[in-house]
Length: 230
Image (cartoon, rainbow, N blue to C red):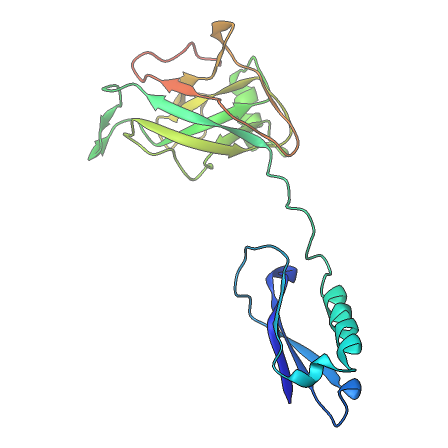
């Protein structure tokens, strides 16, 4: 048997092994291939073969090349599709003023939850906050999630917040003082993404399809929170 081994591209992250079985006449060679586990998930489309039998160089060469081309063509199904666009959203850094965290790491005080939030609705009131969080679809979104928190007692935290396409009229950090979701009084905004033209107003952020809007930084001072929006 004459055998050819190599890697043909990365079609669907797979490598291929191709065997050429010689009969009495190379022109009547039979070709078969089988899928092998992927060796790499990165690289450029390539064809690397080692010729193991000198008879391949004779009258069977043309037919062998045509057969190999046919196999490559059939293996290309979806393998060269473009990389998916990133999920839309915002990213930035939350900076915490030193010495203002409530309680201590061993005994947190009034820190049931801490989230970045993005609201499509502003101005807000208590009813809009509750409905915005729990409606379907919601109009207020929490990062990391309703059951996860930003790290407590950090100096700063980088975040990347996936969001539906749309306009967000208020982005900030919200503190959940106690694990009670039945009243708005347990929620307190402690940081705000400020409008560059007016530091007393929230920054409006446009989230576009396939794009992450960077630079949405938020300063948090637990001792001097911004005016409450609800």
